Length: 261
Length: 354
Ligand SMILES: Nc1ncnc2c1ncn2[C@@H]1O[C@H](COP(=O)(O)OP(=O)(O)O)[C@@H](O)[C@H]1O
Image (tube, rainbow over all chains, first blue to last red; front, side, top):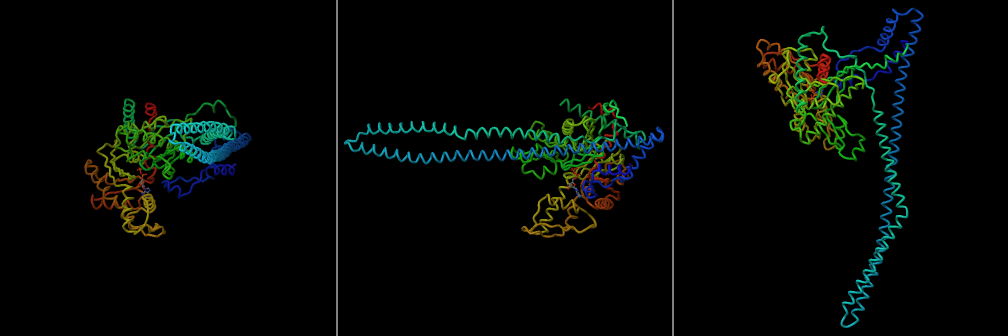
């Protein structure tokens, strides 16, 4: 049993080195070898059993104790494994979020690209239109100037008429183009992006959740089961007792003051 | 071995005691489950959504916060050991700072790794000169995470931890201040306390000035200076040569800074000896010699090698003698003492403060 105990203790112990201790300000440590601790545990078990049990039973109980101890140890390992499992899940979720984020970015870029293309195409069209309008206006002016005296009122009418016609067609075309664009992939893209954003949010929430579970630390138990207080055997017992009362009174006043403020 | 379900389900409420030293530069804890930890007293919150996404955290502490300060709104919630702005509780700075202090205290408690089924009783060492408002703010910050909390004067807890309750002088050398406190068996009061602004930070600045003058062209930051100091600090006989590498126009260059380090560290000695002189001179003449022969150096600054001897020599010259000792564990001295107070405090006192 000694062997496996020592091994178990070694596995449970946290490793540190002297430099690290020094850096964190620790100058003195109490050294107790693993072997010695193992021996102590074994000794303690034997002693408490000696008085209660006879030979054969004792052996049986020792065996059971050992089994129990190893079980405890394994349960700790199982706990660590589940921690590992969580860490893996967390990593997978993180990767998922990362790839979703990339995909979202790609899609958004492609949408922006498409819209820019559409705008460029339209701009080319506009230039042609502008030239056409300029030509029409030129013709109208030429016609008006041909009569003498030039009929400016008629010219104004004709230009306005031409202008409104163009405007009207433009409006219709814009509407139609928008409809067409909608019909095409943009709509699909927008929907995909919305869906992906949603998925991203969901994954991130899960990630946070996992982070919380993973961070849950069972803690380390205190060496005390109940509130202690000064030990009568303590040096300067009376003086320390008075000092404790002074500290308490000051804190009581402080708390009263704080709750009144 | 049988597993009696009744006995395991009846929760045994353990009691975890935590002693905390809430310092300007460092917050340290020492707990009754054997945990001892220390963290730089810095708290950072991501500046914006982008930083939050990158850092994947809502709040960062200590070294990590200092390293990533560019993406953070960084708080050092304790100035000279007292909560910044706590005198003007309604200002936005006061609120943010109080929140940072709360988060820092909560983090310090977390570092102690309490079990969820245990009571947590905590004693916090705070500067003796902290105002009522200040102390109330610290209590408020702590109450959110512990079952019961008490404050105690920091130098007192250092002395209590070493069982030096009577006739001794505690010299606590921190980053921003050196606090000197006279102990005479009762709680120290204002008259027992002297504070000097010459402490760790002042040494850093002095050393930076000396480096600028003596190491032509060397480039460095105050953080680098601090690290050099913490590695080589000494007074008296040089225990080793301090050879450091600093860039000159980008080229790593070696400098022997042994003498400069000693010179910078020595600025501590005169104000300490003057403080000791005043605290002794105003003490009961019958016991002055006892005070003089029990001077205790504590805090991060007490790690300067040879400082005890240097102060002793200066006392012999100026005050006709004295005896100086360093605490064994400068970083945990305050927290260890606070832990001992927490342990020694009777149950009914803890109960009344819950
Ligand atoms: N090895 C060392 N030698 C000299 N000074 C040190 C050493 N380690 C830390 N310090 C200094 O001690 C100061 C911090 O002391 P500490 O007691 O933690 O301060 P506070 O109580 O103000 O938080 C800093 O100025 C730091 O640079």
